[in-house]
Each structure stands twice: as structure tokens, then as C-alpha cells.
Length: 325
Image 1 (cartoon, rainbow, N blue to C red):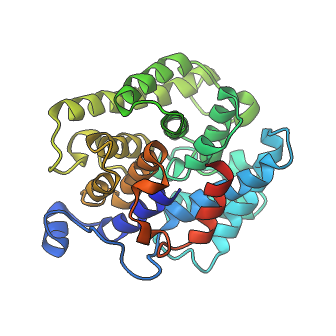
Image 2: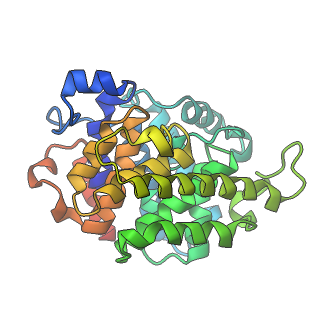
């Protein structure tokens, strides 16, 4: 959780800059130090905390089911929408969907059906960290938290992959084994629609079956994993990480480029989030995902000790970390 926030904070000032602008303003390495006290984060961390706080509440009242967690996530997302701190250039999809949730619409009507923006998976790390969930429950919950705002199947699949990457790394998977494991997950889940969690989300014009709907998401994620393999084979640790895996504005690109930054520096977490922050795309989301992967792999001691007291929402991040470490 702290790695996610660190990456988010470092990437925030470079989000809409080109590589030339980043280098001109911050030097060749991009931003390398947290700025401010507290060091502010963006909506990425704010919404990840919202997802995590609702999960904490739900796990205290088992069994963990979609009927239990859905109203909790709705309330937390609406609280985020109305928060005075919600002034960090939040995504239009999240704002639009959360307004619908606030108005009392069923979530399948409030969600933005065609959006696969990275807001679907920038916040999913807590679902990967939460203990005691079966694979089916973790998959369904990962997709549901995405679907509340982003109804595109690729947003759902990328969110599940992001959550499982966090879980596997926290459980000790070697980073080098991660791309193949994610690819296997894509193939295994290609025709699996979690109806208990997603209800009638699949029902769209031109879609004949839920399996058809969800398969598109897994196929698009597989394309990005192909690009990830290409980028890793090149092994370029200095160029813009968005060149091959994508700029990160969409969920599958954010997942792939965040993974690339982490896998280029699997034992150097600060370098990983520096690389994500110095990118031409959605830098804060890319760096926050790289930070989540790095933190899951290496733990809290891998980060500079002085950062923990300076990052915004440190108390909330600590509450989640203490619960799930």
C-alpha cells in the first residue's frame, strides 16, 4: 500500500508531460524525491484506500459475498466523490459513475459501459492483499470493484490480473515467473463470467453470451502481455517505458507498463517507481502499480524509511498494512 502511494505521489507532477518536458524539468532521471510534507497523492491512492477500507469492514462480517461488499464499496466511492480532497484531477469515468451511484442507480446502470480506463485497476491492490479469499472470490471481487465504474470487459480482466500479481508476489512468486503465470490466467479464465459478482453487466447490444463479453477483455490483456514480453526481451531500462507496452491510460496498458517498470528493476523498488514516474503516459497510475508490485514483492523495509512519515494518508495506509501484512 505504501509502494502504491509512493509511486502515485512521484508520478503526479509528470502525468501530462512529454519525456522532453520531464527531462527539462526534473533531469534525465525524472522526479526522485517525494515533494512536500505531506507528500500529496492523487485519486489513485484515494480510491485504493476506499477499496481497502470497505474490504476491512466486510472481512469483519463474514461470509464475504457480493451482496455484502457492493453497498460498502458504493458508500466509500460516493464518500470519495464528495470529499473536499477529491481535487487531484480525477478521471471522468470515475466521476460520472460515482455520481450515478450517489443518485441511487443500480451499479450496472451507473457504470460507464464502454470505459476500460486505468481507474479500474489502479485501486485494486487491496483485493490482492486481502487474506483468506479463494481464487474465485478474489477474481469476482477484483472485477466487481472495477465494474462499479468501468464496465468494459478489459477493465475487469486487467483488474483481476493486477490483483493476482500482487497476491502471487506477496506469496513469494519470483518476479521472472510472473508474466507466464498471468498469461496462463488469461487462457484459463477466458470463458469464465462471474455472474454472481457481475450480474447482467454483459448484456450489451451485439453480445450474445456472457462468455463472449468477458473473452474480449482477456484477449486484449493477452495482447499487452505479448508487448510486455517484447519490452522485457529488449531490456531497455533508460527509455520511455510506454513505447512498447502503452501509455497506461487504459487498464490493460497500465497493468503492462506498471509490470514492465517493476520487472526491469525487480530488486530496486525506488528505481521501479522512478521509471514509472518518468514516462510519457499516465505516469502516476503506472508508477503506483509498479510500487504496488514492488512492495508486495519486497515488503516495507525496501522503501526509504523517511518516506513513511511524509506520505499523505500514512495513517490509513498503515491501518491496511497492519491488517494484511
